[in-house]
Image 1 (spheres, rainbow, N blue to C red):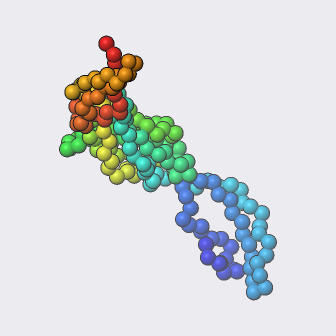
Image 2: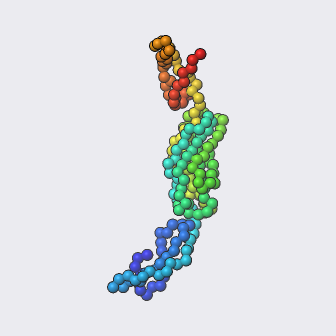
Image 3: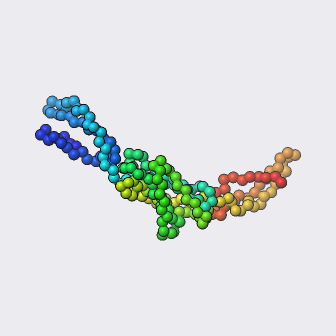
Length: 194
């Protein structure tokens, strides 16, 4: 609080964080200066409240075929606002109107994996991650787009040819596979001799 009148013997301290332990000291002041602080009060924990800070850095992707992997940055303890803290994960295929909701009860969690055989590879999903505690559900993050896991490439490279360079070397060339939903991201090629 601001400086308090000398005849006042109590004050209300505002803008404290929920579910945090505080201790307080009081100092007296006059025109000459400020005196020594009192001994600290006993520790006092503020009451719990619904969490108001949503997780950040919502992303994901990767994983195996038929998986949607969702990741986030965990909310620090001082912003959890109470006991029973956990995460609410909401997702839906891009263009759908129905959200699927899941709950992760681990405070340290930073990942959720949804498995369903009906998920096609590299499908875009709208994803939101929120928080809750024993006081209720809190804030949800803004929507992020996360892609489901990909499958192995379904198309073989075309135009493979070999050219003898020396008695011990052969140069092999091929046409690269263009990216699309059926090929996924080609990270490399393997050349096999038959």
